[in-house]
Picture 1 (cartoon, rainbow, N blue to C red):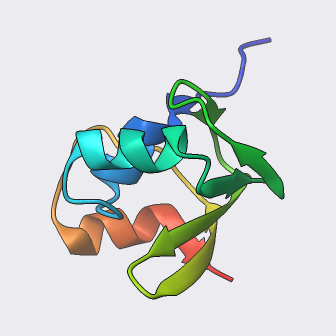
Picture 2: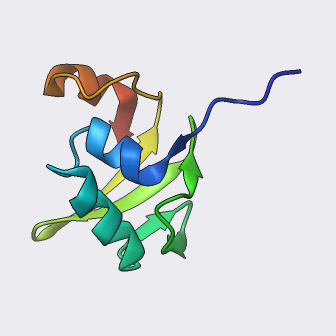
Length: 87
Protein backbone atom coordinates (compact mmCIF):
# COMPACT_ATOMS: atom_id res chain seq x y z
CA UNK A 1 0.00 0.00 0.00
CA UNK A 2 1.48 3.37 -1.04
CA UNK A 3 1.90 6.11 1.53
CA UNK A 4 -0.18 9.26 1.09
CA UNK A 5 1.72 12.03 -0.72
CA UNK A 6 3.12 14.75 1.54
CA UNK A 7 5.00 18.00 1.02
CA UNK A 8 7.22 20.21 3.19
CA UNK A 9 5.08 22.84 4.89
CA UNK A 10 7.28 25.76 3.79
CA UNK A 11 7.04 24.65 0.17
CA UNK A 12 3.26 24.12 0.41
CA UNK A 13 2.73 27.60 1.92
CA UNK A 14 4.79 29.22 -0.84
CA UNK A 15 3.25 27.24 -3.72
CA UNK A 16 -0.29 27.95 -2.51
CA UNK A 17 0.60 31.66 -2.31
CA UNK A 18 0.16 32.22 1.43
CA UNK A 19 3.61 33.87 1.43
CA UNK A 20 5.36 35.74 -1.37
CA UNK A 21 8.67 33.88 -1.01
CA UNK A 22 9.64 30.45 0.24
CA UNK A 23 12.15 32.13 2.55
CA UNK A 24 9.36 34.09 4.24
CA UNK A 25 7.30 30.90 4.63
CA UNK A 26 10.34 29.18 6.18
CA UNK A 27 10.86 32.12 8.53
CA UNK A 28 7.24 32.06 9.72
CA UNK A 29 7.34 28.32 10.41
CA UNK A 30 10.77 28.47 12.09
CA UNK A 31 9.53 31.33 14.28
CA UNK A 32 6.82 29.05 15.71
CA UNK A 33 4.00 31.16 14.29
CA UNK A 34 2.04 28.35 12.59
CA UNK A 35 -0.04 25.49 13.91
CA UNK A 36 -0.48 22.12 12.25
CA UNK A 37 -3.55 20.23 13.47
CA UNK A 38 -3.65 22.44 16.57
CA UNK A 39 0.02 21.96 17.51
CA UNK A 40 2.60 24.73 17.24
CA UNK A 41 5.38 23.78 14.84
CA UNK A 42 8.83 25.28 14.28
CA UNK A 43 10.41 23.01 11.70
CA UNK A 44 9.96 24.01 8.02
CA UNK A 45 10.67 20.39 7.06
CA UNK A 46 7.40 19.18 8.68
CA UNK A 47 5.21 17.64 6.04
CA UNK A 48 1.56 18.31 5.28
CA UNK A 49 -0.95 16.34 3.29
CA UNK A 50 -4.64 16.26 2.48
CA UNK A 51 -6.81 16.53 5.60
CA UNK A 52 -4.31 18.51 7.69
CA UNK A 53 -5.55 21.76 9.26
CA UNK A 54 -3.23 24.80 9.33
CA UNK A 55 -3.55 27.97 11.38
CA UNK A 56 -1.64 30.66 9.50
CA UNK A 57 -0.96 34.27 10.54
CA UNK A 58 -1.15 36.64 7.58
CA UNK A 59 -0.74 40.33 8.25
CA UNK A 60 -3.32 41.34 10.85
CA UNK A 61 -5.50 38.26 10.44
CA UNK A 62 -5.36 34.57 11.25
CA UNK A 63 -6.46 32.06 8.62
CA UNK A 64 -7.50 28.49 9.34
CA UNK A 65 -7.43 26.21 6.31
CA UNK A 66 -7.76 22.50 5.55
CA UNK A 67 -5.28 21.08 3.04
CA UNK A 68 -7.19 19.52 0.13
CA UNK A 69 -4.35 18.86 -2.28
CA UNK A 70 -0.67 19.24 -3.03
CA UNK A 71 0.58 21.54 -5.78
CA UNK A 72 2.93 20.42 -8.55
CA UNK A 73 4.18 23.98 -9.02
CA UNK A 74 3.62 27.57 -7.92
CA UNK A 75 0.85 28.41 -10.33
CA UNK A 76 -1.70 31.22 -10.48
CA UNK A 77 -3.74 32.17 -7.41
CA UNK A 78 -6.91 30.65 -8.85
CA UNK A 79 -5.14 27.29 -9.13
CA UNK A 80 -3.66 27.60 -5.63
CA UNK A 81 -7.08 28.29 -4.09
CA UNK A 82 -8.32 24.86 -5.19
CA UNK A 83 -5.75 23.19 -2.91
CA UNK A 84 -7.22 24.36 0.42
CA UNK A 85 -10.54 25.08 2.10
CA UNK A 86 -11.08 28.07 4.40
CA UNK A 87 -12.55 27.03 7.76
